[in-house]
Image (tube, rainbow, N blue to C red):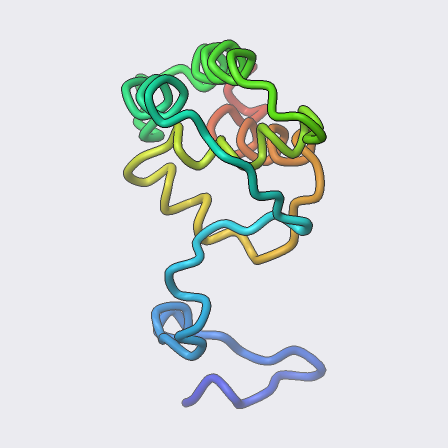
Length: 133
C-alpha cells in the first residue's frame, strides 16, 4: 500500500513518508518561524552560553529551569529594532541538542509566529500536563 492511497478525504501517510527527502531545498533549514528575523549574534558571549547550557529532552532534565536560563542568556543581547519575541525565536534553537533539537527541526515551517506559542509547544512536549498530577 502506498502513501498516495486515500481514505475518505484524508491521505494516508506512512512512517517511511516522514523519512523521505522530497524537498531537498528545505533539508538543512531546520526550524523556521513564520516570520524569520535575522540579526547578528555576539558569538563570543551569547552562543557560547547557549551551547554550554543546551537542553537535550532527557527524562531528568528540567524544561522550566532551561527556559529560565535561556531567558537570562537572551537578556544579555538587545539588537536594535528586534522584538523580544523575535529574538527568542531566533536564539532558542541554539539552546537545544539531541532529541530536543530534532523535535524543533521537525516542526512544520511557519507554524510558530510568537515566542509565547513556541514556549507553550516546548512545555507541552517536555512538561505535559499529565506530569502535573
